[in-house]
Amino acid sequence: EILKDPVKRKHYDRTGSVGNDETSSFWEAYEKYKTVEITEDDIKAYLAKFTGSKQEEDDLLAFFAGHKGNVTSILGFIIGSSDEDIPRFVEFFEKALADGKASEEFRAAFDASKRSIMTVQQLDEMDNEDEED
Image 1 (spheres, rainbow, N blue to C red):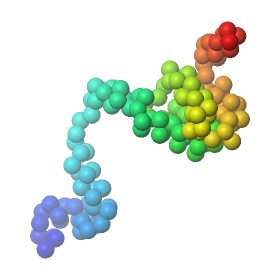
Image 2: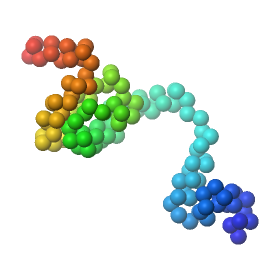
Image 3: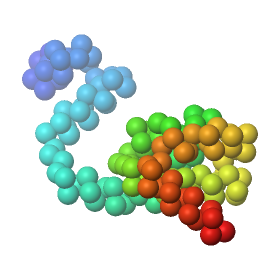
Image 4: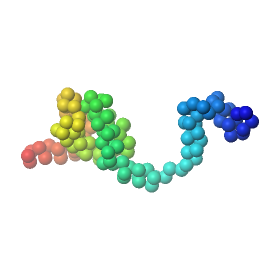
């Protein structure tokens, strides 16, 4: 029966599955969306909604906990992030630690690692702000 249906036969030939498991749903989604073009404007629109969203906050907190406060590799884990986001991320983590959203047990690792991801200009700005306080 499956092999008589050309669509199901093609699916079986490609996946070895008759379509009754989780793998088939992945392949069905893949087949459906593989030709959908994603433009630069699509990416920009997504990042505009993502930046500062609850999802980004959840991702940042999960990263922080998963890396035990060490933020040296954060740009490789948070979608769409760049050097310009670092001060915003540092501020977010400082606030999360103060508000109890991030575990204080990771403060030392955070304090030690945050300076390694900041640019010289960002460090100078941070030092100037500390001097003004």
